[in-house]
Structures are given as structure tokens and as C-alpha cells.
Amino acid sequence: MNNSATEMLVAACIEFLQAYPPFDRMEAEALRFLAEHVRLAHYPKGALILSSEMGVAPVLYILQRGKVRVRASGGAGNVEFSAITLGPGQAFAIGALMAQRPTSSAYVAREDVFCYELPADDFFTLTQQSTVFSLFCSQYIAGLLKQSQQQLQLQFAQRAAEQKTMNSPLAVIVKREPVSVPADASIRQVVELMADRHLGSMVIVDAGEQPVGIFTLSDVLKRIVLPGRSLDQPISSVMSTSPQTLPLAANAHDAALAMAMHGIRHVLAVDEGGRLKGVVSERDLFKLQGAGLRQIRHAIDAATSLDVLQHAREDVRQLSLTMLTEGGGAQEITQFISTLNDTVTRRVIELNLDRHDLYGIDWAWLSFGSEGRDEQTFTTDQDNGIVFICTDIMDRELTQLRFLEFARDVNADLDTCGFPLCKGNIMASNPALCLTLEEWEEKFAHWVRTPEPLALLNATIFFDFRPLYGRFNLAHRMRLSLLRQTRGNPLFLRMLAQNALSVSPPLGRIRDFVTGADPEHPGTIDLKKYGVRLFTDAARVFALAHQIEATNTVSRLKRASTLVNFSSDDLAASLEGFNFIQLLRLRHQHFEQEHGRPGDNLIRPDELNEIERRILKEAFRQARKLQARLKLDYQL
Image (cartoon, rainbow, N blue to C red):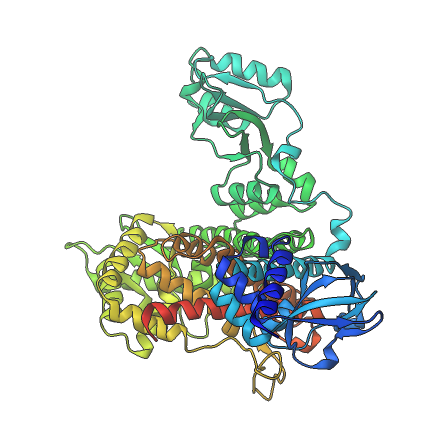
């Protein structure tokens, strides 16, 4: 074919593609590359264009004329999903191409079909040349992730069908106009209004209707009756200032988490201008979730024995399961589990303080690992420590002994309450983890200065720390000290990045997944070691490199994205992948515990349905992209 004819075909192809997304937004050079490297293929009516039996997808198909019927079959249970029909301008086999695997669907011509076909090598070249096309493929994967999450939720949907969802926005939950008063209203006026309207709380607003305080029935006794205050004083003298607010678009999960974190019973819903639009109470959430959030909190706060806390710990698990049933996201559920587990830990600490004399010492109880990241699942052990201040007039050894005796009792009680003792002895009762502020700072400095394998391992555990009880400012000082040390040590960051790359996503070149070689657990993948860790390790490097104080993986990735030039689509795909793996862990642990087993992180890919396998593979690919960024940044 002469050059003139070839150019005409290329121009015709470009003109066709420009009528459909994402090709209508593609860069001119990339679009021309695509047009120059495709070939036009014909398939008669009824012809099988592509199926799993044909092996690894050889090309990207772009439908030019006709209609193609797509039918996919699930793996587990051999479930068949509804067929769909593709029309001109639509592309298919993207996921199979990107993963270099056979397609999970069968594509059949419903009528005479013409397809532009782009060979696999040229497809990958195009993803590198065109940002638009690359983002389109990422969005495609994100769409699959959402589809898979829906499949997961279907397995927990029986109870959800009988209840309102905890995903309900506050705008739906708020049923009546809020009642509020100005700050100069008298206590008498407020109490009378609350009695007249049968209100359990009153919001105090400024001239712009923005909340400045809240007063509840429980405040009457401790703030008015017992102190003997005059009822003629302004309500501002007895109100709680800085009330917790959330936008109307926030959902019930957000409100429940805020109540659990701050130990409150009311959250105020406000509009975009910060004006009061309604009050959401624990009672409202209790009606929604059918689980005892209020009872759990009250039981924990009032507990005088470990028996009560044991039951509360189980209630936390059941409430978290309800959230899973109702379609809650992995981040919401793990953060909720962590928050309520924190509450149990604090109560255990308080009970033990009655038996140990630590008066006059500045100290804090620290959590490490998944608890330090607010990412606990149904199965978790203890990872904790203590930081304290030792003044010149105090004996350091005797002070530490007092803390170690206290920590041994706390660790033992937490074990009784369902938080197993750490097999690696990462607990506050370990003298190596019960240290003064200066000793913690020196320990961190030593690990940063000499990034040997053990130091790097310690960094992955102990640098994700968070205070649970005591003087939180001590943990803040530790964090600032750590960030100062890492900022001035590029060698440590490079070694930490190299350590993060020591574990690869379990993706095979021939098979979909590479499973473990452990004879006791053949055909399994450890989703904690070979899944979650891939994301948390990368996020930790980004956080330390860019002075980000957050410890939560999602928060770290979000804050780092603008500093390392992640696109919003790549960030979204990474977060979806991480949360999908967390959801799989939660579901697996629940099923394990339902059958009387302790619960682990070992899943069998062969027992997942086809969509779940596809999405798990794409989630691992997102982890591989994060690792590729580390390789690029640190030239590894």
C-alpha cells in the first residue's frame, strides 16, 4: 500500500477515535501512534472474538462497527453474571492485557463486527506515551475494584437489607429543625426550653448561626446543681465549647467514629457555611445500626472488672461486623475497631493505675504497628510501649521498675480482654520498650544512623507509633525528633526504601498468583505480609521523606500525593487496592472465627470468585506501581 493510502487510513482511524473517550482527549502524538499501529479485523456474526481458552490476551480491541456480547463466569460457585453488550468506540481486554493473563470473559460478535486491534507491546508503549490513556486504564481498574467490593458486600447483605445503612448521610438522618440559643441566654431560659421541647441537648450559636457550644442534660447536675450556680447566669458559663461538627454530606460512620474518638454523645451537622442544620445523637445511630454503640461505650467507661471489658471487646467485634454487613469501607471499619480498642486499653490502664503509684511522673502509653496506624482488624495482638520523663531528682532505674510492674499488669489484663501477648515481646513490660524520652530519641537516632537489617525492621514497627494514654505531648516530641533525624539522613531513607522493596507482590508470569511454599498452608497468600505491607512500607518512606506526621497509611498516601506528584487517579487506584485487600482480610478473619479458628491472613486465591481474583491482582499491581516509584526516587 502506498504512502498516500496508508495516510488516508490513519486519518480515518484518528477521525473515528476522536469521537469517543478517552481517545477524544488523547495527546495528538499518542493518538497518531495508536492509529498507525492498529489493524482492522473482521468477525462474522456469532464468531468468538476472545475467551479464556485462547490464552493471554494478545491485543487491545477497540470496537469500530457492530456489537459484541460479553459474558463472564465467576470462579467460586460457578456463578454467571449478566451479559452486557459493547458498541462502537468501546475497548475491551484492558484488564487482561495489563495483567498479562487470559480474559475472564467471552466476547462474541452479535452481528458482523469490525475491530481495531492494537498488539500488546504497542499497548504498553501507548500507556507510557499517553497520560490520558494511562489514567483511563487506571480508572478502569478502579471501576473493577468497586465492582468487586460490591461482590464482597453481597456476602454480608442479609442483615443490611433489614436496616438502614450506616452510609446514610447526616442530611438524611437529621429529621427536625435544630433548636438553638445565643450565648447570652440565661441558664434558666435554656433549661426551661429543653424541658418544654423534651430535648436532651441545646446548641449555642453565634450571630451567624454557627455552633460555639453545647449543653446537655448530664451537665445540669455537675455544672449547675452541685456548684450551686445561679440560673440567671448566661449559658456560655456552663456550656461545652468547641462542639464536634461534621458537614451534612458526612455519613453515619463518620459521626459514630467522632463520638467514639472524643467520648461524646452528640455531633452537630452544619452546612458549607458552618451554620447549624441539625443534631445527631447516639440514639439516632443506635436506631440505624441495630448495635449497642452507646452500651459499648458506657460499659467500657464504667467497667470495674475485666469480665465487663471482655464482653465489651466482643461487642466491638460484633459492631464492626455490622458495619461490614452494611457495606462499610475497610478504612472506616479498621479505624473504628482501633478507636474502640483504644477505649478498652485506656480503661485497662485506668483500672491498673488504682493499684500502682505513678503520681507526679510525666509519661505516656504508646501503641505501635497496626494499632499505631489505626488499622487494626478482627485479629490483633499487643504492640505497645511506655515513654516517661526522668528528672534529675528521680532514680531512673527505680522509676523504670515501677513502670515495668505496672506494664506487666496492663499487658496481662489486655491479654485477658482478648488482645494476645505479642510473641515478639513488643510490649511495655519489656525493659527495652519502657524508656525515657531521651532514650527513645537516642534509640531512634541509632536506627537512623546505622540502618542495618535489624534497625530497618525496628523502623517498620516502632516508627508507626501513637499515644493512647498520658502526656500526648511526649509522643509529639518523639515524632518531631524522628522527622528531624530522617530529614538529614538520605542514606537511611534509601535503605528503608530498599527494605520496602524486599517483598514483591505475589504476581506470577504464567499463573495469576505466586502462593506460599509453606507445607502447612499450601496454595495460600499472606495478605498482611504480601499485601498490606507493600502499601504501608511505601507510605512510611514517603511520610518520613516528606516530614509527614500522620501514621495512618491512607492519610500518609493522601498527604504525600501532592508532594511526590501522584495524579488523583493513581492515588485513588492505590487507595482502592489497599482497602480491597483490607476488606478481604476482614472477611477472611470473620469466617475463620465463625468456625472457631483464631483467624489469620492466609487466603487461597483459588477459592475467590473470578472478579475477586481479577481485582486482587490489580490491587497487587497498584502496590507494584508504588514500589516502582520508590525505585525511581531512590535509584534502586
